[in-house]
Image (tube, rainbow, N blue to C red):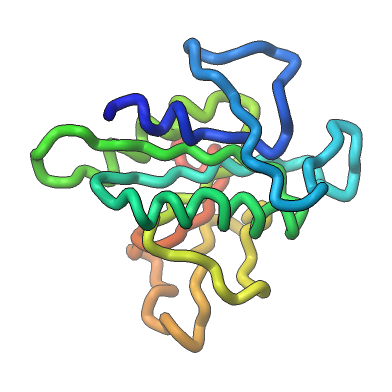
Length: 167
């Protein structure tokens, strides 16, 4: 269904004061623990992550992914919104186009993005999803994926600022 991502998009920030964008409802993620950040809570930091998840026909993985990532990011006190970007046609999977759509839909209330495969879960609690101050950053456990740390690889999990994305 083409509206799947709308039903599963969620935010760890609650409703925004600015209203809704493009008719997209912002639904709170199911709270795993009392980790919802109060708007004025400084320990959650100033940055907001848009987790962009290109998706097609992997419902079982998706059902595990969304609550897991919400808990993981909330425990790290990372303000976030999760965007499930569903390709509904039967043409070749176009991850880049889905990410472009997610970038546009994420609007101005997020300042960095994670391009994230739905089949990857961060099992190592030390993996860093924080704002990539030093530029684009590939999130991978070095002991498991030592070859993923090269400049041209954009699969898996890649963090970058919105400013870098627009370059």
